[in-house]
Image (cartoon, rainbow, N blue to C red):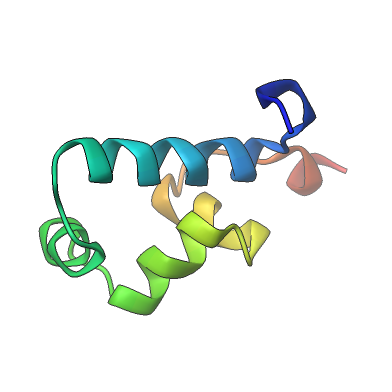
Length: 67
């Protein structure tokens, strides 16, 4: 699967995971630094919930919210 095949939230989740790993941070480290729960970080990275990414950027309007 290439970046062109990913949805916006899948791409963001993948980039967050890559950045976290490159910085040698655990999900728990990232959760504490971002002041969010560990399951929330996991869900974002696994892209299990399209709404998880939108919660990172409350002023961001996803295409689904416009329709």
